[in-house]
Image (cartoon, rainbow, N blue to C red; front, side):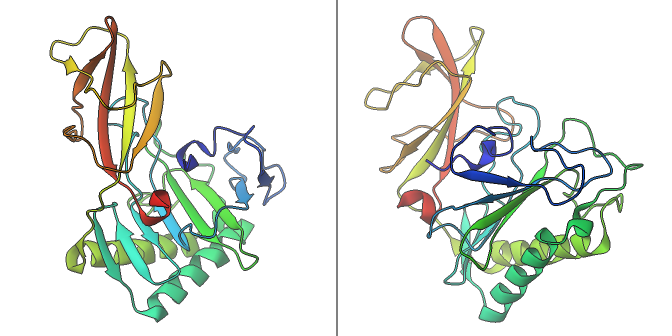
Length: 258
């Protein structure tokens, strides 16, 4: 299963190299306010998107910072997916421009330095950008406070220009693309440490969630009738006699299906 949304926290994962792109950058996915973020280099898989933008951060509560689908995933064949819900084949020049622009920014340390006098909002979602490098591996950068086009102008101009490009492609896919409705879904399950007012029993036939705080379960044959959550309200379930979880799902992207 693709665990990218825990990439910046799980530094003990094997097969990943952490590349400090500036003096003083720290190898834990955290940075001082005057150094660029760590850019993670990893081998990845051949079917990963050429470019991907997601917003996985925020409070660790149901509906906030969990199960947000990638905002934009663009594959090597030119197909773009917005929010794992809409898809569109982009003109080749769009794909090339986006890829080259993202690669140029992520390989230029000065473009990633945030103004130390303009800290990002506390506990808000952060942005994560991943791009395929010429050698076939992938570069990933966490960008705190980048969402919304960097309204504080805390980052250099080239990073703001990249956001404008990415957001324009995302908006175009949402407005003109067709629905993406594969059979498979990704189920997110959060452990609840209280007895909710309303719940139902965990459906029979589905894998029983473990006891960890958060887990993802890939369901290649659909959600088996599980309802999707609203933005802030997740359906609650009883697992066994005295355990409770909240759960929702999103559609799988192509590289998550195979």
